[in-house]
Length: 123
Image 1 (cartoon, rainbow, N blue to C red):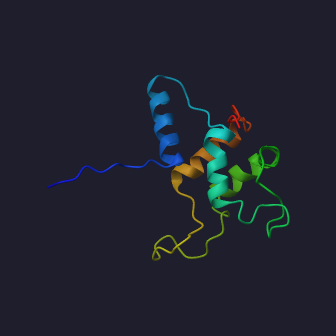
Image 2: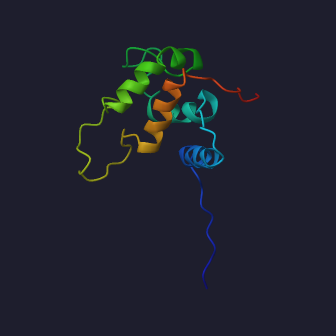
């Protein structure tokens, strides 16, 4: 018997699908901090980029992230960040610090759009 499975979509997958869907309607999707960027930063960046962390500035809040948005776009495009020395053709490692191409595009598009915050989630 074949059991149906449920596919779980990551925030990045949802964001990429959203960009594709809106692009189909003739509109360009503009990523926002609260919907698209914050999940990426939390997963890949804030373990170092936090007050008192080993990185030179924090990215754990929207004010700081917006301040550094242009630089985030630059360093993800050049692949300077996140740092992960093994080559792209090396074996997979647990807890890799690589960003996928979809996550990089989101960060770069967000920076290019002047880092819009979007609507903050209700608490």
